[in-house]
Image (spheres, rainbow, N blue to C red):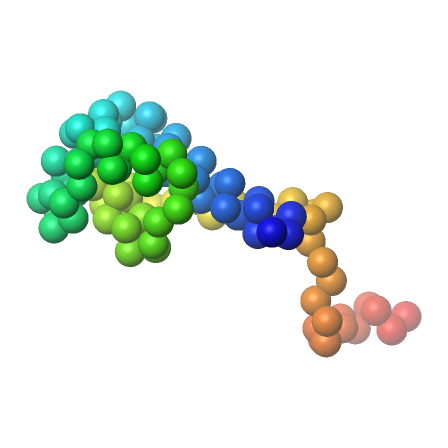
Length: 96
């Protein structure tokens, strides 16, 4: 896995875990909230999924809705991990 993908994978995992902790929602309570949204998860299954950080975007949206999250700040790739975009249009200042 390249450094860029690893960054986003770690950020995705961290985001939901931190939101759950910030909102002081237990895994059992979150499982009950998810069930009300149509996603049946045992506390243990939910704990494992979230701690592994491997789940679908659909599941992530269900968890965010169950936590009452209405907006997110999307983490940006640090400058040192960014690669130049091949074929990107140059700005007028580039020709000077």
